[in-house]
Amino acid sequence: MKIWTHGFSFRIDGKGSLIDKANSYFEVLELQGFSPDTNRSYAYALLSFMRWFGADLKKFEVFNQKDLQDYMFHLKKKNDQPTSINQRLSCVRAFYRFCFNQIIPMAPGVLLQRTNYKHKMKRASFLGLQARRTKPFLELKVKVPKKTADPLLPEDVDKFLSDIKRYRDLGITLTMLLCGLRSQEVIQLKIDDINFHQSCIKVHGKGRRDRIVPMSFQLMQVFQKYLEFERIEKNTDYFFVVLQGKKAGQKMTREGIKSLFRYRRNKINLPKAKAHQFRHAFASDIARAGTPLTTIQKLLGHSDPRTSLIYIELRIEDIKEHYDKAMERLKARYAALS
Image (cartoon, rainbow, N blue to C red; front, side, top):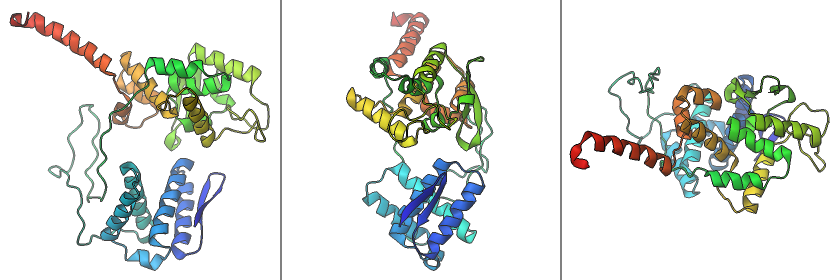
């Protein structure tokens, strides 16, 4: 079994009634407008599951939570990351509902994570947002440890930018650093999306949610130099294109972006300089400048402001600065401290 792709379509190439059902599932995802990235992740998740479980639909019909837990153990033995395991478990649950119009049945020997069911409706968050209803059933999943982010320092960004020789590569990096775009959003940019007269960019975000973000004068200069000296004119309206080789003039791919950043960070020995880190740096920088959370949410293209909080990482220097200011006020408040 393997993944077969054509354009934005993803299918599992193989024989079996469960594979046929999965390919029908992918057709429905495309029909409902799911993004190519989502379809791709679902395809690879189900491929992984079927390589372990098999491709018999009748066998899948009697699938239960104990079987799902066994699959979770299988993924743990492979040393998959907790987030990856949870994503694959969620995909199997969604696929089972698609096949049989019900959730995966419970079974003895399964331990689900506890949760709080004191209220049908959760209390409103400190952001004053509409709270979501509690799920009517528990789900089998792995606890994801909270990791401390290692954000890019200003000297790291300067080191990375100073080594770039092409206007295209500089434009891609600055689009993430100064506008907060995702890699996929950078790839999807078209020439008409760059508005030099109004100094803004139209971004085609996740979930088909478009947004407009401002564009700095420095970024406009880089874009103009790229269009004037580097961009190859071919039958494509995508903004960033391949500059050399057999695919010169074609739209850049996700793998191309990854390869670009991998080459750069290996060259200057800066392992943490991955593409998404520049989006993190953008969020941290504008938060440090006092930008309201709702504005940060709009710029990053998040449907939930709480997601934006994940991207806002303050360095210990920033925390210490606020702490020192608070201590000065405490000294003035309590005479004994001085």
